[in-house]
Image (cartoon, rainbow, N blue to C red):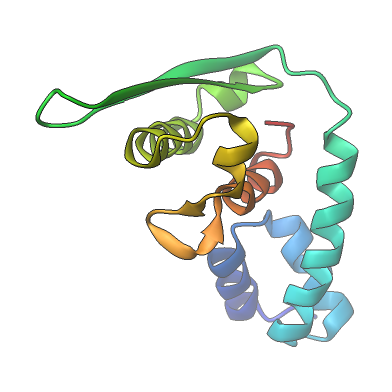
Length: 139
């Protein structure tokens, strides 16, 4: 039986779906650190699986600095309108536009390798992968 409080905690800490968190806790017998290790392994497999899908939806996201001297615009694609209309996807798009305006990456590879300005323990690629797992779609 899964401990609901631990399920809630694991979900909040990882951003991974309740179903995957529940499976990881069941497999780890409610041990959160072991569940996180399980999720990391599963995450890699899920992300690899989703990378083969096509993206037909998405949106344009922008950031304009308060002094109006720095701005960025980025297109982020996903698989469905359902995800592209999601508030959390919209926030993700804004965060990426802010990142671009702040650190001026020359290309997508450089962007993905940058440390996330709001959490130096993550790279943008980590943030992207978290969102792929959260939404269950290729982004």
